Structure formats: C-alpha cells, structure tokens
Length: 306
Image (tube, rainbow, N blue to C red; front, side, top):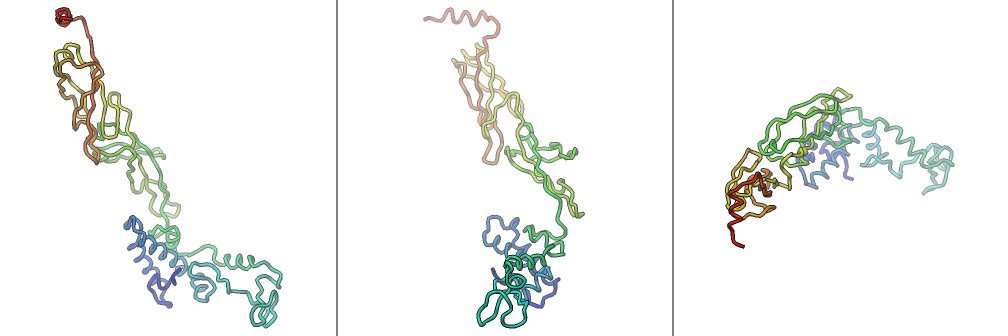
C-alpha cells in the first residue's frame, strides 16, 4: 500500500485542513459516480480513502509517523512492547540478546498486544467527513439518511406518451414523478431526498423507484411489441373489409383481406411500445364473429358451388 502522504500529495508536516482539502480534491476527481467502469479511477479512489482514514485521524497519524502502524493501518510486526528496560526483558530472546515481550511478563499472548493497540484507535476519525471516507462515498459532512426502495405500476398508455405519475411512499406520503416516454419495465428512477431522514441532521436519503407495467385489459406485452384480439364480422372475413383496432393512442383502421381465416394474425407496424431500441409493433389476432343471422351471407354460401 503506498505511503498515505504520497497518495494525498501532502508533506509530512501538513496541517489537518491541508490533508482534508487534498482528500476532497482526490475524492471528487476519482469518485465512482463520475468514473463509471474506470478501474484505475476506482483504485485511486480506494487509495485516497485509505490514506485519509489514517491521516485524518490524529491518533492514527501519530502512530503511523512513529512506525507503529503501516499504510493500511495495521500494526507493524516489528513493533513490540519493551516493558523490561534492558537485555533480558522477558519472553523469548530476540536477535542480539533482546527479549520481545508481547504480553505481560513473558508468558502473554501476542494477540493481547494487538488488541490493546487496536483499542487505542477505537472511534475512528472525529471529522464527520472521514466517516464517509471509510464507506467510500466521497461526500462531505455527516452521513445522509438511508435510501429506500419503492415499486410502482404504470399504465401502458403512460409508457407510450410519458407524463406525470403519483407514487406512494412507505412513510404514507406520496410524490409525483415525471415518467419518461418509452421507459422500460424494471427501470429505476432516483428521487433525491425522499428516503429516510439522517440521524445526524444531514440530508435525507433517496427513494429508488422501480417501474413495473400494469396489466392491461386488452393488450399483452412482449418486449416492445403488443398483442391484441379483435372480432371480425364473418362478412368482412369472407369478402374483405376494414375493422377498427384498439391501440395505445386510440383506435386505428386495419384492412382485412378476403378469405381471412379465424386465428390469423396481422401486423400493424409502429403501434407497439416506444422503447429505446425503437417502437415495437402491434400484432392483431382475428376472431371470426358470426354475429346475427345474415341472409346475404347465408345465400352466398348456398350459391357457392362445392
């Protein structure tokens, strides 16, 4: 792990304010939100967070300067408690006749020394900005409230046009969102400041709203395409004609060719959902409607040979 002073680009006698400014500059430059998919930026951001966790805390900084902890904040293996005062301090003999006492009187457990050392650092940096640094958020000030997740179902007509939609929140409140035209099912919209309040008096968290499609009484969704069934009078199925077909933007006219069998599907291009990959199509399944007795149609079939 690189030297934290070198990571932040400050001198060893830098003030706490200089260290804070240097960290904030790096956190802003390499934050993941502004460097999506950049592995090098993510690594630099992590290094800056680690460096500030050490140098932003006066106790840890002093321990690092004395060589008691390394650049990761871990106790150095060579650091020992020379509690005796001369050769033969206790415990096992080390190089040159020195004895390294990791306990109290030579029989202690080395883990006790490490536990004591870690207890000196409990609590972490007092600067509230450093609490965010440990989580890698890069935000200044006390931590914000938690984000919440919400689902809302929107009608297909709103997907086709975009517009306002009211969302109910877990706390009993509601908020109006502006749904973009062609939003995909499963997409998430972030509502700033509509999450849980911060216990530290900072900004509330955000509400993450996941979009679902309402079940439609007429249309079935297949990606960007829609399917619908339409009844066709038997006369139009035999001799051809025009029928009215429901679409998301109102009824449209579709021509049925002569001698169209029941169950046949016709395509109306561009009448589906306007998703980002393009507008889908509307597939119309034709159901033959015999309707009331019609002497003209009946006579036609009686006169038809074979």
